[in-house]
Image 1 (tube, one colour):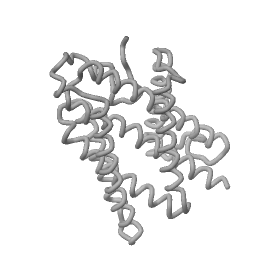
Image 2 (cartoon, helix red, strand yellow):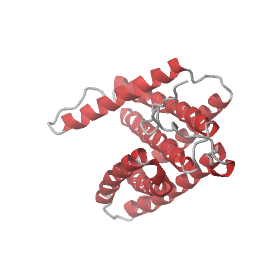
Image 3 (cartoon, one colour):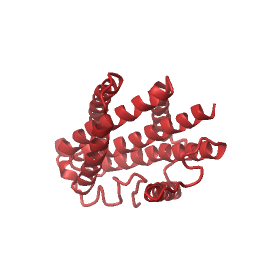
Image 4 (cartoon, helix red, strand yellow):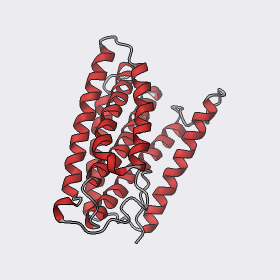
Length: 246
């Protein structure tokens, strides 16, 4: 079965060409989980410092912008040169922590309590999707996988188009609005991001079963982090729309 994920960091070639290696040198699900926790801690610490800096009156917008650009470059390097992931994955987590910390502090200053709600919802969705995946309530079939991939690519195209049009002062209708349709669009995007978690779980499990090398634990943790960051940002945007609506 061809394995694919809606996460752009996990392509059909991610775990290809990996033969069986000695058990001490192959990827395991437990190892990927441990690396994911390490990256989550790094992200949280970086977010905490950026959050505090913002609340103390420090202008962090420049740091957030620089971290976002460097983080994007690091993500590309990690995606195309997977062997460097033990170094680049932690760096990516720290950079994304700076970005999330700044964005979260901004939203929190406008809507008190929104950050805690976004964090709890992200963790709750993660736990829920993991339970659904492990219990096989929803199975990751080819049809399911292709549907999520198509939806993810559609969202990426719309966001890219929105970014380009913004330079000409044009906004895509409803995408950033707090109208009922705008909120519905954000809910749909959150659902797609959530479903990507199941594809990531499936892909990582298959990678471990396929005898991928040890460094792929870091790469897998990085890929999962990409989805979680996207999910969190979409949730906080959705909550902000709801706050503005009220």
